[in-house]
Length: 394
Image (cartoon, rainbow, N blue to C red; front, side, top):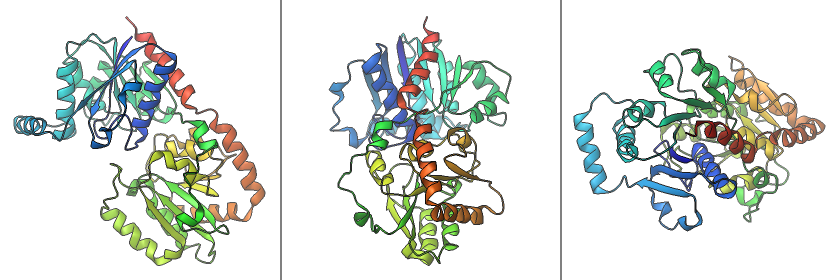
């Protein structure tokens, strides 16, 4: 098959700046390189970090990357923004998909896969008669979404990362074109992590500390504020420490107002909280291996977090909110699941203390977490993904 994969248009693929969607695209491409013979073209954005990347290792994959910082591209985007005013996303993303649409209009693809951008579907459908598959990673397509039914109608299939997201899509119109394909991770990396010469001392922690870790973007919907507020309730337990690993969406450490507010909140218990900033994805397994438990305090309906899979694979007992698809990834044998109600902050603090006080409980949860993570390997993800995609071969 000839397959086109269109990235979300912000972070680069290969995923040199991280990103869950971008990492999963890497897995798809690598799996095809090793086990299948599809011809894949990835349409995305160029990045300075790709300047030294060795693309020669790819034999079955082409990367068509738009140079968004070039003067020519910026001038064309400016003209586009002047001629168009009713944007689905914004001038950046809408011009990105318009540019891709021109590129693929005459290409003989068997299927076009759009990664996580429902708003790309209708513009693409005007450029090509090729079958379009939407791979949906977030809760961004339901009956309230702009042009929702038209988007569903234009898709030959929709892949969702959880049943939660599937049900949101099916609220638009009853359809059998929606399939759940759970995310996967590189299990070996998390169960036998490379040390990177990393230690608790380097991170500012001691061997006697009980380390609670949060990994992910630092933004309001992820519940970071509530997690920090929970730690203010644990001030009597001086050796319970919080390690916050993450930065902004674009992988930079340029701090916005929310991050500034979180640092100010953390300053009230400064000896208990450490911020690492953005960390390269390849370092995350080593960081998790130094921790005792993890918290995923999302206050939004998270589709299905990669962090939950990574934490389980690392053998970390979990405290999570009952949020979107998260309870599809974890279960109550490896996680304490708390409700997102008015008692959330107190319940996070209580749950951390339960695990802190009960070593046997932690050991049992750790064992089950590793066992459950075997359901979410990158190989299983890729097999399920291609099994569905290959049904659309002409």
